[in-house]
Length: 400
Length: 154
Image (tube, rainbow over all chains, first blue to last red; front, side):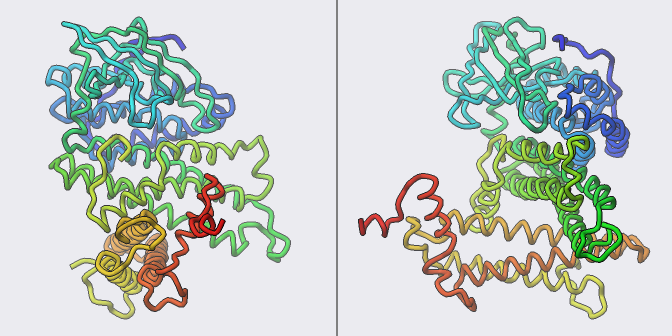
């Protein structure tokens, strides 16, 4: 894929929550058709992404005063869930783009907001060059930013850069001498920026979540925002990053459950069941019932998480942000577990024939297992319990 | 008035999940209170208070998730009922609410028995908790670290 700093066409602008949901359903129906083929061939979804961002869905969180729809985060989660049920790689790719839009809202100057929100409404996509695979932990950065009089220089090596390969602008996180994190908006064709198609994970195969190298990349100061401020003060940025994760996993569960029912209907009856058809098996029937209530419970909590984020955005303080983190953590635990459970039960209820390569049904489990590793659910139980039992507010960072 | 404050009326399709959810919340509160005020940390845990025990903390996380799911599915079933007809979708939403509330109540009941040591047939649930047996096994098999009692014998 050649580096391009412009979208091929100007995006549609979405004006309401209902329109966003309707557009997502329409796109998802198209994205579902070749999702399996894209996974099998690791065919990067370039055309699909152009269609996705041109639909206006990548700008729906931009506030109304900047020309966007300013939708509820209940809607954001629903949109990502709908797309992810069709193709979770496509659902994951806007994850950091949406996170960056909120960091802009929280920390950018008025001129920067007008400029970048305007670009996104035209159809520009942000990628990300945030994480580093060689630093001590997920929140530690080695990439440096040095400020001169009117420019900043960034040097470093990034990984897990979902979306960067497809982006027009690559926001890169770098720390200054005081270890404060900034985000530099680097044009895709900026000298010194190299995006590497090195993601060969067994799941989420077409996210191109590979590497980015920043070698003496220079940007004007107007392209740098003090991202650390989004976490120095209580803001909903952490819960916003997290709800998109939970929405992708919920989407995987919804997609896998639909597939489970389709294949369970066609399964051969087990010899001891004394039935003529697999779909008459009382244990299979009950297993579907069990998956159904768990998926609906997860969807209901995802919605509550969106509402808690909306509340924290309306009135950001220690308490509203802590509450948003806790409810999003509930959605995160539930969605991770149900995505794995559903994508595994699929085979149990569909029988041995369902593992044949021609069906490629393992992509659901591969996607679930890969994407749910973003941050461990085991520490979310702890986060939720510590708030309930001890009143300890969750640490504020992009993973809570 | 909402699902949680309504009196239980026989014949109401959501009486059972309302009742179960109410009991789950009451039991959770009692268990929280006990662990905060009365529970001793397990001696081998190295923690000064039971409320610092990471396994106890995360256990409460699990319980709260189940209760929130039960509450959300109860609310969902109420919305189906309030929106009118007695159709299959409503019946299914009610059944799902029953399952979620019973799941929460079961989980909280088990945790109450285990964490408070009251009314449990599992002797030693407080003084010799199973959660730390898992730690003992894992710490030897993963890290080669011998359990303290064994090391002192050798």
